[in-house]
Structures are given as structure tokens and as C-alpha cells.
Picture 1: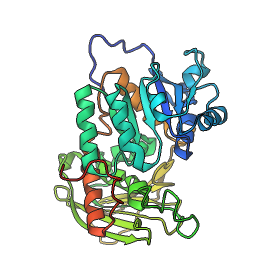
Picture 2: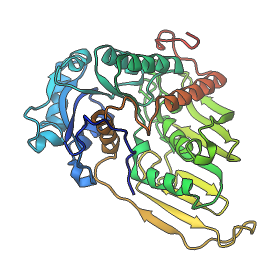
Picture 3: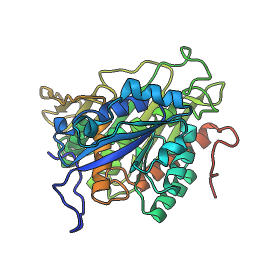
Picture 4: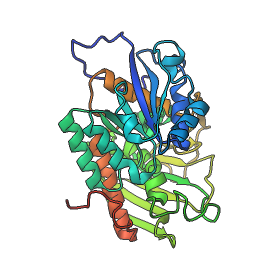
Length: 395
């Protein structure tokens, strides 16, 4: 089973030639550390032969931070550098803009705080650089619309980094669901939680309104990606946007959401999705996502963001109400690293084949997701501090 989409190619593209994505890493935090660690893993270890990765530049708010990050996380660079395919080591820069302007950089990874995503992505595109921006790509749908238009005008690649879309378990479950292995889809339940409330200060990136924190923007994309890939992308749905019939939000005293639930209906499928996130409780590591069909169910095991196994539970008699199940079929899909390398490989493949957006993570789906978030925040009265949103809704 292929984990990669088919790409339209031109006669000028050599399919067998190795393409090396030359990355600038912006931000030296937790997610950037995982990203560069995964870029160091040999693509051949996961069956990838056509692309590899070099870490050319690291940008931080100070030169010392960038230098320290390189020495700790990627002193020799990425897999291409460690294999001797690229003769350079990462260069440290004391500003994000300097790193993006490095002439050897072909693609930018933005792993900074939520409030900086739009400005940095806009700068990258304005200066002719392809861009992968961590989720949430922006703070609202108007910001994303501007970035998407700019990328198209400049003929550059742009993608929101919802890395779970490229996870092998999600791809396998998506194939099984769309193939009809559990019959007609009835319900999808997907949850993600972190117990940071009362354990981290209100100034943390999760709880601070000034940093655009909260459950929805920070971890909301994880349950949402399961709903969109399983239901919105289902062949019988015919790319019909969901109806959002309910949102519930619990606000913190800082103004951000501590918990949010979003209920979506898919009329063509006669199916419903329940997506929930919260910062109040520790996550249930055994089960985060459950997809129920007319002939059985699939339970995704492990974190919603990076599962490594799933089980299929089929009804013995699908006509019986409350019927018994056959023994569970468990599918373990272990992989090295954190799981961000699958996303990086997909970006490199898009660049190799000249695509300006990924077939797995289309601009239109990011826009639709941001519009759902806009509506959830409006109904929940989560209002970002003045000046954080660089483009206002309605502009």
C-alpha cells in the first residue's frame, strides 16, 4: 500500500534523480526539535528513495539560541548531510528573517509560536521561499486566504503542517474506511487532551491569550484531521463541506478556551463527527479516535496526533441491534522517530514534482478548518487581544 499520492509530472522531471529539500528551521522549541531529529533519519529506513533532507539554516530570536539548538539537535545537519550528499553544516542566524534570506535555503519550516505564523509565512513567500507552517497556520481564515493568494501569485509551495495527515496509521485507517471495511460510516469520535491547567502558569503558550493559546488552536487540529480525512474526503461525500451544528467552549480567566467541542454533520453520508479537545485532563493513551460503521468499528490506539496501531472490530451479524463482534484484528504499525518525517517527505516530493500545494493537505481544507475555528471562537466568545490578527475577518 502506497502512503504517497500520485503526482502529475512534466517531461523535464527525472523521476529517479534524488531531490534534496534544503530547510531553514525557524524557532528552537519543542516541535522544531522533533522536526529536525526526524529530518536526520535516513529516508531509506522508511522506504523513501526519491527525496532527502538537509538542514541549511536555523533562525532564532538570538544567535546564541540558534547556535545552541544546532549543537544540541542537528550539529551535522539532516539525513542528506549525514550521508555526505550535501557538503555543508547548518548555519545559525540571530533572526528569522536572516535565516529565510539564506540563498541556499529552498523551503522554510515555521515552528514558532502561533501568533508569529502569519507574519513569518508572509515574509517567506514575499521573499521567494516555499513554506511549511506549523498548525494552526494562522489565527483566522482571513489570514490564511491572504497567504494562499500570495503563494499562488508567487508560484510557491505553501502548506499547513498538520503532520498527522501523513501518519501511516491514519493512511491505513482512511483506506479501510473509504473501502467500506466497516460498512457505511455512522459516527466518528475523536479527542485530544493535555493536563496543563493548574500545572503550567497562565503565561504559558497554552494558556495565554497574548500567545493565542487555548485548546482549539493548539490541539484542535488533531481531532479535526480525523473527521476531515475519514468523512469529508470519503468518496461518497463528494467533497461536500460539513454542517457545523454545535460548538461548546469553556473559557479560562485569561480568555482562551480550556475545552472545546465541535459537532459536524455530513449529510451525504448520514454521518456525524464529534471532535473534542481540552487542557484540563490527561489524555487516554489507549483510545483517542473511534470510527463506527454499519458493519463494525475501528479504534485508533495511541495519541490522536501520532498513533502507531489500530484495531478493527466487525459485527458478527450487522442486522442485529447491539450485536456481538468477531475477535478484534489488531494492526501494529511501528515507526522510527516522532512521525514528522512523513510530512517532510511529502513536502520534498511536492517540491520535486513542482506542486504548489499538497494533494493531502490542500489550501481549501486549511481554509475550511480555519472557518470552522472562527465560528467556534465567535460562538464561544474567545476574542483574541487587539492587534494579534494581522488580517481581520471580512477584509
